Length: 141
Image 1: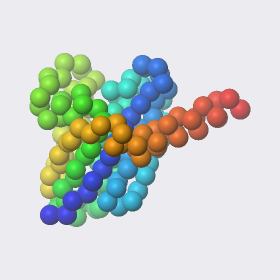
Image 2: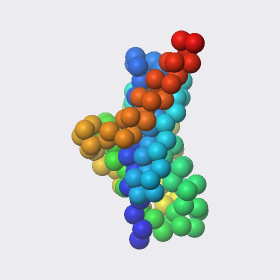
Image 3: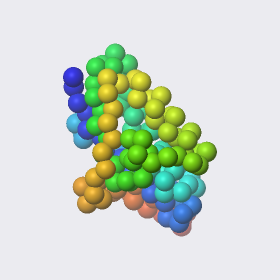
Image 4: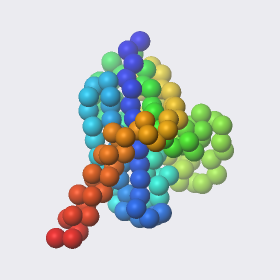
C-alpha cells in the first residue's frame, strides 16, 4: 500500500481570533495555507486536517486513494488523542469535525494520526503564519 505523509497545523491569533490552516503533503511536495476567518485554535487544527484529507483525495483520485495509507502528523495532542479515541469529545462543534474526519477516512485505504512536537511541524506552521501575515497586510492597506 502506498503511503502519503501529511503534516497539518491550524492556528489563531486570539482564541478565538483570525485563524488559518496549513498543510504539507510531504510525499507529494505540496504546501497549502489559507485563512479561515474567525476560529479557535482547536477548530483551526481540525479544519487543517479536514482540508488536507480532502486535498489528498483530490490529488490522488478516488481509485488510488482507496489503495493509499495517509499518515497524518499534527502538533495538536488534543486532536490526535480525540481522533485515536483516547479523549472524549464533549463539544458539539468538535463532534462535527470528528465525524467529518471519520467520513473522509473512508476514502482511503488507511489513515493514522500521530502527535509530533511543534519543532517537527515547521512547514505546516509556516503556511499558517504566512496566510495570517498576508491577511494582516491586506487589512492594513
